[in-house]
Image 1: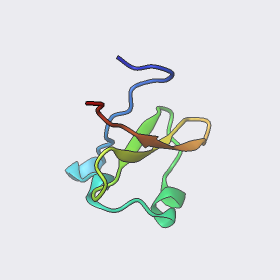
Image 2: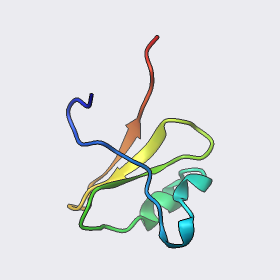
Image 3: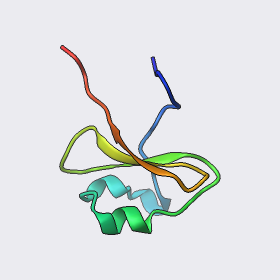
Image 4: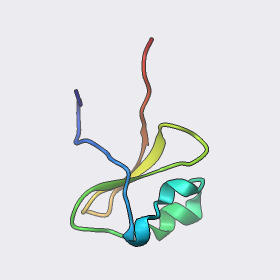
Length: 68
């Protein structure tokens, strides 16, 4: 169940590569393009940490975790 937002799923680019293969840095965040649909990019070294990019151009950090 998702509270307070839409689901965030890993983004797959042409050729099958994903940005989850690298660490999220300022350079990676600055290079993310605005698209008609919301998407997220996940960090390769820190599970559950990512950046969400919205169609408005807003970028926010995302953290997923499991309690218990």
